[in-house]
Length: 117
Image (cartoon, rainbow, N blue to C red; front, side, top):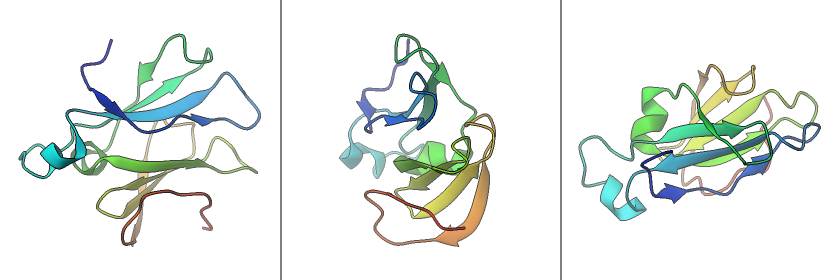
């Protein structure tokens, strides 16, 4: 269904166990830096426990720089946070249907357990 070959670990919605999130990229991490179009990331969501997946509208910054980590707000689980390889943070308040930059940059993101906004 998707042409990308690389993915990050899935993240499960805390109150809707059939809802999963992940990100896919073309090629391997070393190749992204060499290509002008970057990682060609797609954010994806499954609502049936992983049987089928839907590509989400993904901001250009995530498409190019790759979603390094995904975290869900445990209190408001439709708030989805994404950190890119370039250190940019994004938030969706509608389960990944739309995204907004948080306007901050962090260094060396490889995992994200919590976000305090």
